[in-house]
Image 1 (cartoon, rainbow, N blue to C red):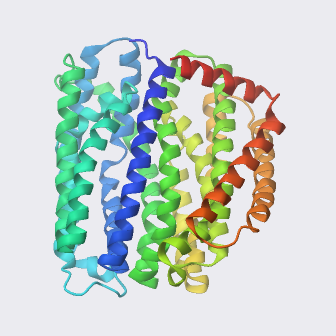
Image 2: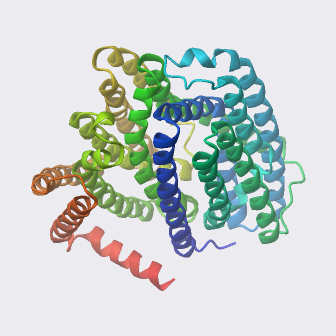
Length: 506
């Protein structure tokens, strides 16, 4: 089966970004409603449960990534029988994973209150809330989750976006009613549970209609199962590392600094992850296409694609970094007020974190698309352990700033250079020196522009909507104008123009 990479990626990006923008704006309004109707401690409680459940999701072990990667080749060769066997194996694995999460989740239930230093909302039963959140996670594996692999491997994430958009709309309406009318946090969490059930069931029905010739049946050869299990084992350390990085910050803040500080941190982090989520749509939309390209195209072609994608991501990430630097504090002041602000040094840390994260995400897309998890198996874990160690040390000396800096330092010093080496040694078979010099040049340009644009926007006073819009316009115009002047005749710009024309034509 020929995968139309550009066409599918374009559809995925369009529908994915539409969904993400929707999922940013409405939950933002909901967070605001929760702050003023229920109290900021509830946001901290939300963040804590999310982080705990991310730890429990280690049971997934990277099965999803391994199975999707295993489908690229049979899809390219139209081997329906092999795909059905892979689905069946995936189904069995996810049943065991859901069971494992349920058992471990119940075992750690008595220890959950010890992760909250203070600020637990009065009258809240932390055990009931935790078990409701746990149920949503378990059901996400048990209810036809294995069928999503078909959509991911066929590069049809736009279908998931459409289903999620419709069901989330119903969820948001009900949650707003709960917050404004009943002010009941228990009902709020129950709606989250029902939303997860509905998304899984509806997506399953859509997959059955789109791919009626695929059914979870048959058994793979022992050697094939062994190869998949090896991929899962290789992904295990990456999974642990990702969980530690994503969850350790919130748990450490809750345990050392309390739910209120966690909520303040999460307000800033929410804005950051909202931007990351939009850009992540591009990554997710292209992963299957890149995987297909790595199989059927030459190393030189894939290296040229990497340069092209790096240029695109640097352009986008640089613009977002400049916007964050200029708009973060005024926006937070307008949104939550002076009392819930962090210092400007935290804003700088968040901006550095964001830029590094986006570049690292692009490289991780190539790692996942190529399936080089065995070679890369120890990097995520070592990076995460360095991050956790720095977290526990620095939080005692510089508080919240130490938590943010820990992630930046561990990624820059350990994770990023290690990942670059693995990619170029395994996929491109060449020295990464030229690529790194180009990336360094891009980064220096972004830093210089960030300073210039921040100075320009500093003349705009106040934190009203009008002043925020003016800052955003200044940032957008100056950044894009300078970038275009600098790179208008570059090879990357020419390639990007071709890609855009091709996408629009599709």
